[in-house]
Image (cartoon, rainbow, N blue to C red; front, side, top):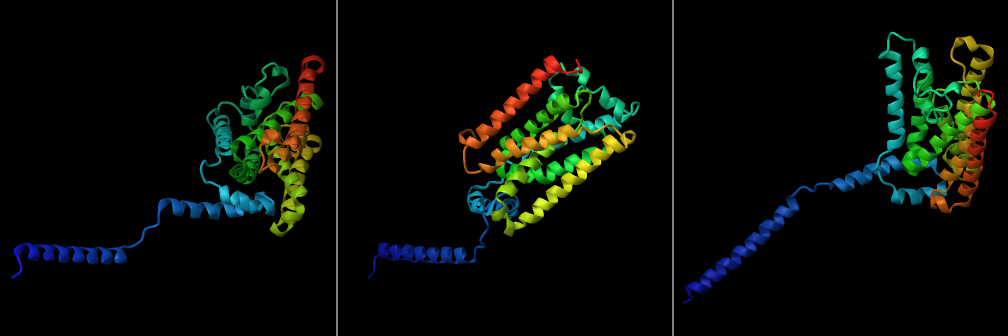
Length: 302
């Protein structure tokens, strides 16, 4: 006869086997769930693939996609654009007793030759715009070009190029058009455009399969149209609206083609160790220092 202990042991053994079989069945029939990180990575790849094709040459796209991240999002361009829109709405709609031109003229943001001692105006003029067409054009350009650039190069580099173009625009206008007041972010927008244009031009062979020619023609078309409109407003029909500073556009574009190009071209290198960036920064520093000295000692607006 088998002992009661043996029977109990056998039952426990059989129960264990049944439990294991049931667990295996549950594992087989249990629906698989995608992990959140896997879904986010797949979504990031779908976003970064077209952006890398638009912004980078072919030989750096693979490296970029390997280390691309969706976080943090492009904060700089988004923040600047939002602030500009809010300030425009304030002067256009929240101050109904004054016209837009009058409200902007007495704004603490506008650059005015008679207020040059308030140094922040050389930068803050980018926050105010002269009209609906003015702000729509600048916002459209900096969002379409600035967001992809910031996604690839991050906010510090894009912010450096953008703000350098804004300062270069106001200083250039103060030297070559010393009695001209300034509003708008065209200096920063043209700096981004100039930096991207030079990057496409220098890497043209690598970018031709990726619509390099189309991108060059598109940039040239936008710049020619915008500059043509500015020339028309300044010289042919000045009474149709506030005067436009051609110098600020040109200075911003040249800043982009020097400082911007050196920043956007060293994607795989540290910025402070790049010789091209050192050269461009030195030229920009000399330009800023010369313009400041001119404003202090030689400007006819004094």
